[in-house]
Amino acid sequence: MPIDPIEQFDGWIRHRFKDLNTQLEERYFGQDDPADVMRPEHVEQQMLHDEGLGHIQAILTAATLPSDEAAAYDLLGNVGLYMAALRRHELSNPDREQRSPFAQASALAMQLAAGLGVAPRFATPHVNLRNLAHGGAHKSFTWLHDESVFIINNCFSILGYIRAADVLRRVLPLGVTHPVTPKLLADATAALDEVSHYTEVLNQTLDVRRFFYNVRPYFKTYKVGRTDYRGANAGDFSAINEIDLILGLCRITDAAYSAQMLEKMPFMTSEDQRGLQSCARQTSLMDRWLEALPRGPLDESSRLALQSFLAVCEAHGRAAVLHHHVLVTRFIEEPATQVDIRHLKQITASGPPLEVLLHSLKSLTDKRAGVQRDDIETRYYDLQCLRRACQAT
Ligand code: HEM
Picture 1 (cartoon, rainbow, N blue to C red):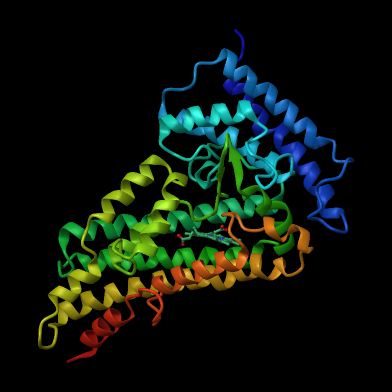
Picture 2 (picture 1 turned 90 degrees about the vertical axis):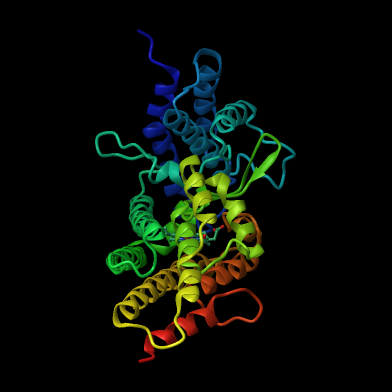
């Protein structure tokens, strides 16, 4: 029986694709300027293009596309890995093109994405929580140790956020003063502290230069058809925003925040999009506490419940601050100062210049940490009010 072209493509992505990317990465890394990838001796770039195209043509002519959501998302991931790699090796660059030079891959990606309600490009879940391993090996761009370190610890961090969001969601029908609530909040705090733990693991185990020159470049903006789709980033999942909204550290009525959330939604799975939509309709725990505060001192059980709520907010803020000061600064901002000016424009995954991106990421971090800011909305004063209520006897 002939092998299904979709399976053949998957096999190619899991082996040969990784071999070719790894050979190229090792070569780039050994150059004086590791960011200079446009050299004639890199013949594997064309092989990557041609072999992948052969698989995609076979799928377009012979195969019936999967009707099952998980299988369609998986195939979209494979096309996305292929297109993101071609972009990484500069076989395409949205700044030079009106449309993607990869018409067949674009057609397949758009057809799949339209049925799924997601962006037609490679996104974080394709290498994280929707990445089926075969015999212990998960999908990735290369065989490089540092790529695996990044993917695995990113998975652990996302799982920490998901665990926190899962328990926080259960507080909503119980209310802030239910006797069970402090236990749920303590579980959420522990899960968020695990996120911080994995940030530390990344800080200690991921090689800065390897990440910057050989891993991060696969996460760039590229065109599908005529449209630019911003780069994938490790944060394209809903749980972190669900936590923002359930706690009330960020609000859907804050236009800057809701714009960021809307922008991010097509890069999430449809399941994540539904979860986030449901959180956006709820009254946050912070607003419930502000409504429930008595005029006089709190009774002991309410004080303990409020303390556990504030502890979750602090853990969420801590994780966000660490992401910014450890991961963003050390792995992107600092190495970017060493890069030849010609390559600087290509650095951020999401497209805007680095300083613009860092500015908006800092605002998001300050919202999560409830920092006092006069120029953007944060819950600093509301948190202060709750802290005072907790201390009053
Ligand atoms: C070496 C590791 C990492 C680096 C250098 C890094 C850097 C960045 C940068 C620069 C952005 C801005 C978007 C863009 O690049 O275009 C971003 C966004 C984001 N990252 Fe990371 N990141 C790393 C790992 C992680 C991990 C492990 C998580 C946790 C799951 C995470 C969560 C997020 C989130 C949630 C966002 C989107 C903004 C938001 O909603 O907060 N990142 N990251």
